[in-house]
Image (cartoon, rainbow, N blue to C red; front, side, top):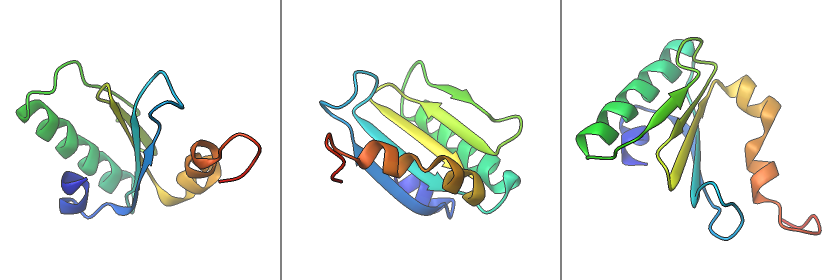
Amino acid sequence: MAALEDDKAEDIVAIDLEGKSSVTDIMIIASGRSNRHVGAISDHLLTKLKEAGVNGVRAEGLKTADWVLIDAGDVIVHVFRPEVRAFYDLEKMWSASPGGAA
């Protein structure tokens, strides 16, 4: 979260998925202002994860930088351009509990 804030990511949200997903425990969603900003945020985060000794980190979407997914195991980070984030609305999808209540 601090690395995203340092790189001026916007609208940073952390969603606790423990017990809701077998894939990850925490999903972090953030926005960058442009493709270049999304790419820079993602590159810096990958570097900081490597420096922190996190192994096996994978990233997808760096080439176009509309939506970059960084899989660090127990934490998955999505960095979007704002309009792409609004279109997919992952916060709504993952924050909803069974029965439709958030």
